[in-house]
Image (tube, rainbow, N blue to C red):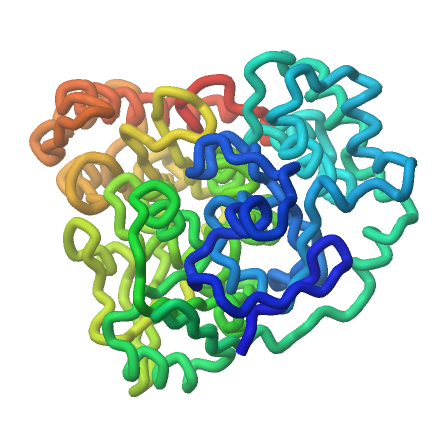
Length: 478
């Protein structure tokens, strides 16, 4: 079976390329489209940005993504647009025209990727602030023009939604069956559409690499040049992209993209909404999945500390059925999870915090955007009517091989008045429980001091919360 997709409105068939050929390499090396550039090759610079029309659970939508991290089978049955396909004859697309008008291009190398990010922003309906318009291009680097003209171009087209063929495409039905069985050059790529087919594929290929969004596995190909004889993609499993909301909270499929998570859950959980603003870039968030972030089991994964204090539950699925594990118990060691055999993470159940509970997330990194945290934390506080601490949860990332709780610190707060003196006392005692690691991102001493300061910052936030729509201005996210 060949890989087939629409590229700039032309149907493309691929039959004899390795399954892990990236979309970027195909566009440049095999299709001669040089507008899509290669910069970093790891999803940081945005020069390779293209747009994909797909339904990620909320209906057809254009998503700007990094083509350097996408394998060709991932676009099977979808529509891909590059900078070459935007203009209508001699008439430039509004995203292109805005860059010309504001003089947002100088050497031009980064310009196509920026235009494709602006292209997505043109058809969004949720850019309600200039900060969100700026975030649209946060994943695109430019070394020569300076960001003011690019920012102005983004703000000009954000939410414009002109009556054109790209808007019309959002109302057209999309291909629903994205299943695929593709073999070439001695390698196989399977993309099952049902869980039954997934168990069959995993049983037949026990050593196959499982891939969801590709933002992590893609790096192994683009940077480490690894070859996988068998890959099983989760792209076609609609059951993993289900996101439901009720009074109790949210049930989020493991395949739900981070962008979709922000759109549906973010406004109701300000701590999550602000965290996701510094979760990679928009291009990364539009490919990365909730399950990928958790199953990666990195000690510095962004979502785990917050979800742990929220009391989230991991629902694990396998051929024999499902089982539930508290998310705090899901991580068993460095890059190790509670998954057994061919099981997968099916979904995560996130309870809705009761009224009056303060929940916060923090991420400390060397730069605000597109960076990995040195220290992260999720914090939960519930006070009774007399101002005594009724319940608290503290979870930390970047301290050990897995995200960790500090039960001694939590116990020291319970039943006592929530005062600065108490918080400082407990913060000083965190060193009894936290034994941070030292690595190239931060020393153990630095991490210990940051943890202390974050707990004190949580207290200060509880006294005077920031405006709900305030954009973080430092690497500490609250």
